[in-house]
Length: 87
Image (cartoon, rainbow, N blue to C red; front, side, top):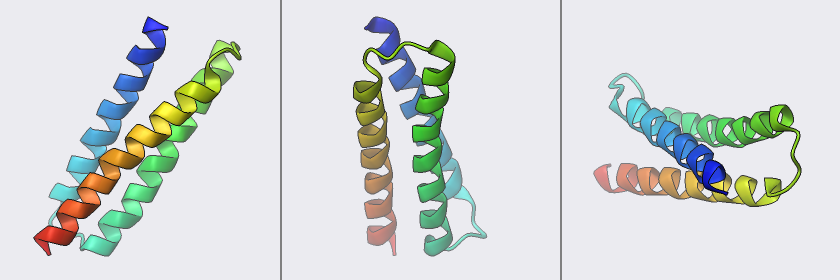
């Protein structure tokens, strides 16, 4: 189970990094940034699925998928809230 958490945390760090990079680009407005957030969320879920495909171990897949999807959603929701407050 420890390797599962390592995988989950690495994906969360990638999501947070991509979110910050998207928010720091001055040529993008809030709508374009939020559109990128959707792609980041989809990419995090696709990454878990790809890891599952190569791992070929069904045990714990749904749990990893929920943790990665939920955590990524929370990271992106916090960033969206920041964008809304920032204006």
